[in-house]
Image 1 (tube, one colour):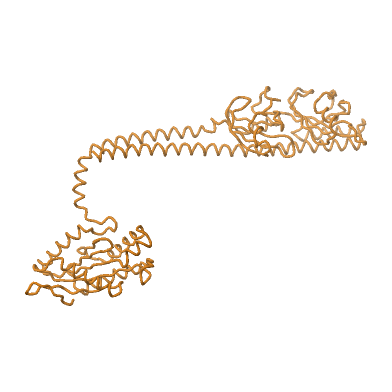
Image 2: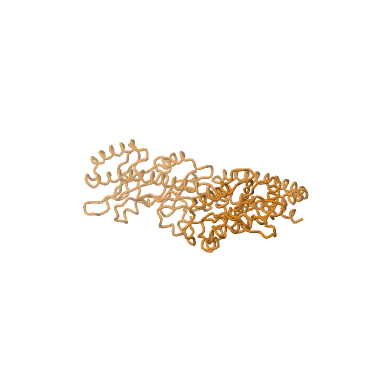
Length: 499
């Protein structure tokens, strides 16, 4: 029952984890897609702002030339005829220009770039009133209005010029066709619900894509960047529902350099997330399929629990490997000791045994920590395993930092050589150990060797190697020490015999 509950709990956890990870991936993907769309919108706003700057600088340069001519040559008919030819040439060459005008101090049109047009009076126009009442010589950009000449939407750009005494003499005016910006914006792909707005700094719309007559002259001053700290920033981005058409968009704005203008670009949020939505649907289908598979697999596993419990119980009894080092464990040690001893008695062959101990291992654990100590034991185990070349040889973890090695049918010199190979391999690891006299991790090894018979217990071989190990430690550690063999006497007392 416990295992079945564990399987069910695991499946529940896996399903929840899959849902959590998928949800996190979906949200991360959404944030990334919105970020990419925002960056693209910002870059587009910056590009269109630069284009607007270039356009108005071109127009402003033409106006400055007309102002200079009007102030230098006056507004007499002869001078105006020359200016008219210059104006016509500018309009012909510059697509941004719709028309050019010279207006006197009373608002009367004196000359324009298109011959034959009837001259109108402009004294009631806001831009004329502005220049007449303001001595500033700076460029004034007016609102989008209907042209008196052809009825098209135009943006007025004007400059004041003065009499020699500094009094108001009139103004030079350029008109930019709204179609110029519309044609430019039509080449920009912003999706079905995207918008591009050219507006005055106070939020008055001059031109907009898509073009809507009702939006011209409308204010976007309620947009967030007009009401927040972004009001003073040259550029920025935000997300908002449009005050014009109510569509939720990702907006970016960029103020036009040198002029009281700004460009606002908006991309429909729904369109920006269209790809993400499709990807989300695919991921959710994959998630549902994965959960279905896990549920089916879980039910199958629960159905197999009884069989697996029986098999695992049998396997557990057969497990003879130390989990940390990968060598044989103590259970295997005891079994092999008895088995190999009886085999040696039957065959009359010698049996060698090595007892290996990590020097000052407790000090190492106290100084470096148990995790480092476990790593050292694994390294020593690797050295031991690497020194054994025969299938019959067996290494086991005796306990703690002690290891045992069985070497069947091995004489004393052979056992000693194997021990030295192990000891030197550990030294070659060069693992730092501040508590060791040599400054590195070392091992001490006791070597026992006997020719077993029925009167000697198997533990005698272990005692011999263990005694040799203690002698190795007493003699300075990091050494291999051979032990005395043990043979029975007539009185049954075991006495040492030199190896």
